[in-house]
Length: 315
Image (tube, rainbow, N blue to C red; front, side, top):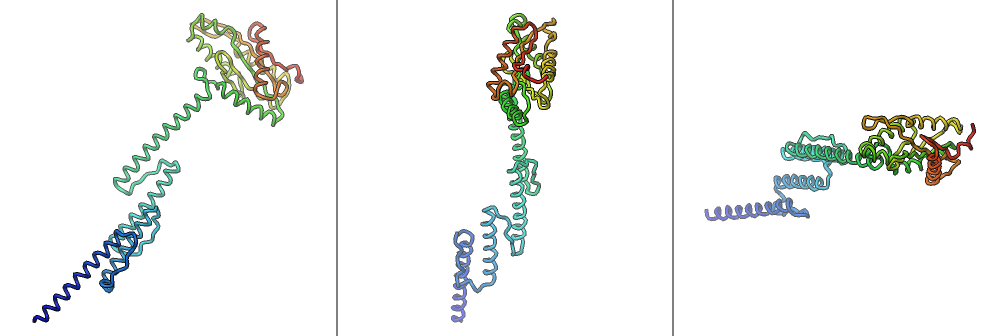
């Protein structure tokens, strides 16, 4: 009987050792960076080997997923691994959605991850709202950078930029370009007599009439104060008559009465024009020649226009 008790005691000690070894081994599988080898004391237990394989696969899935790769093929079966596969599929799809969002598609939504979906969708909606606001602000500032705030016409910066562009086009096409400078005569008298508000109304109406006289291909700008500019490409002709028609159209649009403070008021304007390539080939020269022609026009009563080189053109 005493012998039997000794054998039972020995078997109990061996089982406890295996249990402690197994516990230490499985703890190492989960927490250690380097994978340990299974102790010899438990290597012959099938359940231990099966559990070790399962834990190793879970570990591999998590380590690979940590680096953003959700394509690991799970071989083991069971509830845990079914859940892992489902999570892996969701994460893979979520990664794809995140890439779309990063690429600017803020219409993407998540509907398969519970509360996380709500948080993610709320984030994309807020991003879309912020992006819309930023784009609107960008458009607003871009518009203001190139437009006159009072009249809505293009401003001086845009005029000079467009003049460079139109000159390059005229050189390429071997065509004409008319550069026009317009100055309203005695505009200070309008401000002094009727007030600055009336002066602003006159500038706005004057700008509208210039726009009405222009074609779609023309550029009309407010250069500052009571000074305006126009760029008129002339691709199909070098005829003097063509430019005379342009001149008459501009004069007709502004040589009319304006309503100020309930009364009709007629304002004169002086118009000067330079013609590429006769008067120059660079922006500043073209502007200078047009300015000189405009001062010549000031010597003429009423609305007057002087083309610097119109007499050099064919009839």
